[in-house]
Image (cartoon, rainbow, N blue to C red; front, side):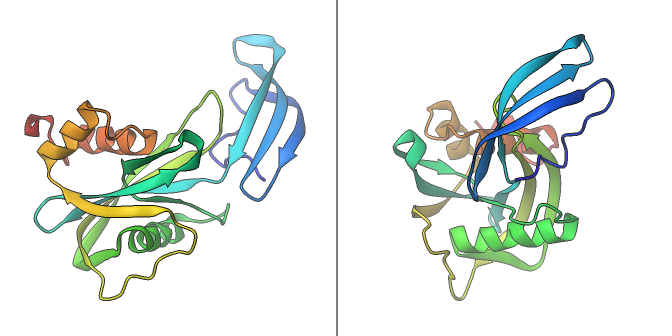
Amino acid sequence: MKRSKLVTDKDGWSTVSSETNFANPFLEVVTEKVKTPSNSEARTWTTIRRKAAVVIAPMTGDGKFLLIKEERIPIRAAIWSMPAGQIDNHEAGDEEIKKIALKELHEETGYDLAPAGEIVPLGYFFTSAGLTDEHCYFFFVRPVQKAPKHNREEGEAILECRAVGMDELWQMIAEGDIRDSNTLAICARLAARGFISLDAR
């Protein structure tokens, strides 16, 4: 698996060596020796490489956000989150990534972008920068409408999809019902860009 295309050796960063410890179609574990701008002695670090992903904040015509409740095996729990999915093509450009976001929206929620709606790119973030180079692209999609037919992806463990208003969204965050980094991060980006307000609490 290739390193994230957003991670490059420049401005004093230099990879001295890289050894693959484990790899499968979904991730790769590598041990690297890397020189940093502040230290000429190379540091050894074990990194998990993962495919990039998309995270979607879908808003309905009446201003509610769609959340999904999905079983997550690593934490042995079903939790609420915004829809998301991995990008299989490492070289995907902006337009292809947008299409992937709309595809994931449909598969995970059964909703599509409404006619004359918009998909607003909100940049990206690193999910856990001390552990992995995985990054996620954020998209605000509005308005969305229920699809005539829901083409689900096989193997998904999504138990429920529902629309929540701003007050309920903030309450779910405050009480820990929403606790995944993707959803917390996209809510912070939406607030910082002025698309949602903290005053709704």
